[in-house]
Length: 193
Image 1: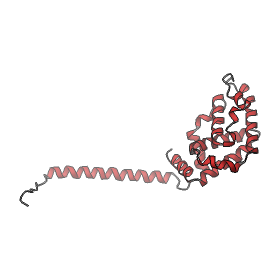
Image 2 (image 1 turned 90 degrees about the vertical axis):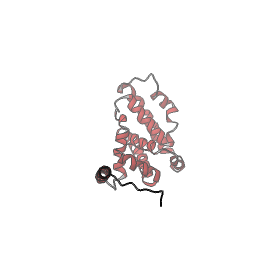
Image 3 (image 1 turned 90 degrees about the horizontal axis):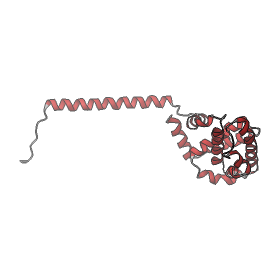
């Protein structure tokens, strides 16, 4: 057509474009290699046990200050949030006593108050209807369930009623295996470490 003119591309400008494209291609290939390396470092089939343990330890490590009152309160709070049968535990007299502002941050002061609270938690866990709680779990945030699992495993190791806490932690672990949203959250949280 008479109105269209094609202007020849300046050879220097063409070399600049080729340099830019070559640089972009090299950056892309390097990014893909890093992604492939990261995927090889993260096991494709990490077990739920391994993912929960590592994810919870990374996300909730402040709960490891178990020798402090604040750390113990945080663990109790996470457990209560994750387990519907324990929702009223903090409002009971043993819970109010444990969360009282007057309780001193001294193991000699708070451990004697924590023990009856954990004993009441065991009683509630053993006397509840677990099947009725399934619906409440379906609405629970996976991060809350992971935090609850973490707290339960910590109390299982140190309390007299440890078996009840272990069984509940196993129920939460099973939830991560069965529920697609929980599994996806756990895998994403694990891989983002």
